[in-house]
Image (cartoon, rainbow over all chains, first blue to last red; front, side, top):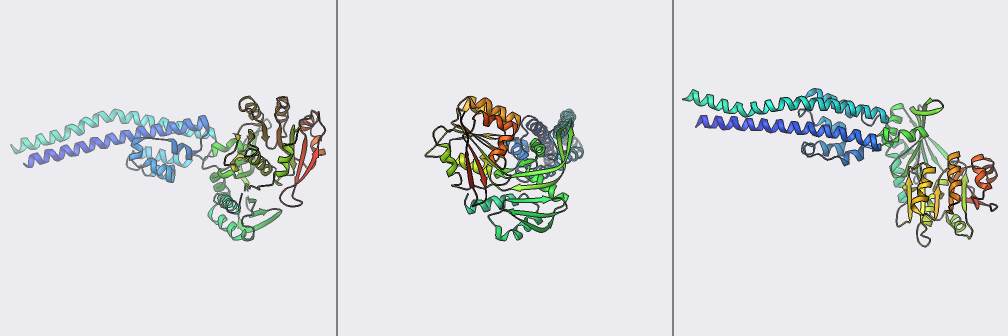
Amino acid sequence: MGAAMLVAASLWWGLEKVREEERRLLILRGLVSFCRFVGEEINAYRTPLLKIFSGFENEALFEAGFIPLLRKEGVALAVASLEGMVNRDIHRELSHFAAELGGGDTESQKTLCALTLERLERELESFGKAYAERLRMYKLLPLLLGASVIILLL
Amino acid sequence: MNVIERLSAEESAISYLPHHLCEAVRRSSGIYKGAVSEIRLRLGSPLAITSGDRNLITGAICTKSDIDHTVRALCGNSLYSHSETIKEGYICADGGIRAGVCGRAVTDGGRIVAVTDISSVCLRIPRRVPGASDDICRLIMKKGFRGMVVYSPPGVGKTTALREVAARMGAKPYSLRIAVIDTRFEICAGLSGDLTVDCLSGYPRAKGMETALRTLSPQLIICDEIGSREDGEAIRESVGAGVPFIVSAHGDSAAELCKRPNLSSLFDMGAFTYAVGLSRSSGPFAINVTELAGE
C-alpha cells in the first residue's frame, strides 16, 4: 500500500514537473512572439506601445498573467511578474528591454527588439534541446523510484 | 466646446505633467480655469500658464526630469512613434493636445536628423468656438467662391477657425464633402458628430491634397499652415481641378502674404477669392476680409 502511494506521489510529482516544463516552454515561445510582434509593429507602423500591447494575443502569456499586467500597468511590471517562470539571465535581459522600450528613436528601438529577440530565440533553442531530455527524466524518475521502492520492499 | 469640455481638455493636458507641476497649475490657474490656452515648461525656469494674452508665472521650477516625464507621457511612452514630429518641433498627443518642443538639434547637411535634450515644452489646449466661423462660412457659400486664405500671427486661432469651418460646413444644412489635410493632427482631433468630413491625418500636405483630389472627390479642401514651396505647388496643381481650398498661413496682412514667393503665385493665379485676417481686437475672432481680384 505504501509502495503504491509512493509510486502515485512520484508519478504526480513527475507529471507536475512535465506540466511546469511545458508551461515554461510556452511562455518562452510567447515571449519570442511578443518581442517579434513589438519589433515588427515599431518597424512597419511606428505603432505606440499602448496599441501594440492591446493588439498582442498569446494564450500562455495571458494565463501567466503577463498580458493583463502588460495592458494595465505596462511592460516593466509585466516582465517583473515573470520572475521564476524564466531563467534569471533571460529575466534580466527582459527587464533591460522593458526599461528601454519606448525611450528612444525608431532605430534604437528596432535594435533593442532585434537583440532581445535574438537572445530569446537562442534561449528557446537551448531550452528546446534540454526540454526533451528533462521530459524523459521527469517521466522516468517516478517510475524508477517506484520500482526501486517495490524491489526494496520485496 | 462648452465649459465642461474645455475643463476636461485642460485636465487632460495637465495629466501629462508630473504630479508637483499638476498641483502648481491647479493652484495657480484658479481664476483662469476653463480659459487656459497654453502651459509652458522651460528647463530651470518656473512653469508658466497662458490664458488669452495673459501669462501667469507659477512658483514651480521645471527640472530635466519634469520635462523628460512630460515628453514621454505626451508620446504615450513611445518616443519612436513621434520622432518625426519632434524633429518638426511638435508632439501630437491624445485629445487634440499639441505640444511644441525644442531642444538641441542634431543636423546633417542642414537637415535636422534628431532633436535631443529637450529644454522647452509648450502644451497647447485645443478649443472649439461654435459660431466663430459663421462669417467665414457665409463667404464660402457665396457664388464664385474659389478659395480662401486665413491669416493671423501665431496663437490667434487659425487652426480653431479651420476646425470650426470643417465642423460647420460638414454638418447640416451644408453637409459639404470636406477633405481636411491634417498634417499635424490638430484639426480633426476636435471634430465629432455626424459630419461629412474626411480627415487625412498625418499626410504631408502635398500628398494629402493629391490623395483627396484623386480618391475622395471633395467639395472643399481645408489645409492648415501652408507656406513651403511644396505646399504652394500642390495647391497650384490642384486649383485646376476646380475644388476650392481654405488654407491658413502666418501673417499680419494680406499685403504681407502677397509678398511671399510661395504664396504670391497663388494670389496671382487667382486661387483665392478672399484673404481673411483674424485678430483678437473684439472677442475671440474678429475677422478682416479682403476680397481679392479674380483670375
